[in-house]
Image (tube, rainbow, N blue to C red; front, side, top):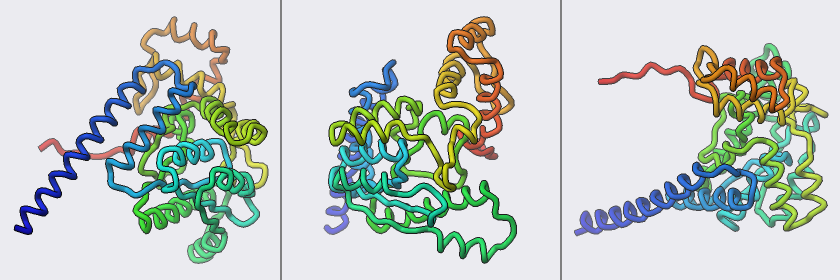
Length: 305
């Protein structure tokens, strides 16, 4: 009898999961049919998608790593609205080398989200002392990203929470990210950085208009060194990256070996219309190809039988 009781409970859970998956597909279909990803409807769809995804997995809530930047700030707003008090935040500064967590902590308190702060500097120093060798900014930054990701998952696993991704479309496609880090759900990967800023300004203004203006206009930075600027490192603005990606995604085939326009005259006309130089377009294309393994997956040998 115990076996049949267990089977019935399992089938009931399966039925609930199937209902959730059906709703998730409906939300996704509505999302993919949209032309406008900047308005409040788009934001509400992200919130509902996140809520349904959490419930469909059986997780108890969401965990967000908050840096005080525009991406993680919008992610926290979405998470809070999706799961309420089942949202948990972590601030993971690295001593005094990077950006102070003050803005992130202010946002967390404004949204009334439970959180903890862990300085990862002692762990990082122990790692580098153990391995020795080179410790330049890029190597250090990559390691810190992976270390922070490990801490997020350690806490999320203890709580049975999902880790929510904070990446956007621009950084995802050009590979401005650290391989070896991941999240469970990525609600913002369809948004350009400028769209993230618009959503953040609108939604955060419901709590504090002045703070919303300030946060949405912040310079994007990985936060590993003082005054570090993402656009300075990339050598091109996010606005131009977004314009270039719109052209590439709509008009080109993206292959591991290169990017091929479907119609070269139309492609060239679009570049001019978007006020991009050929050099800027080529720069974005070269970043996509160089980091193809990040955005589209590492090369894998499969078997067909």
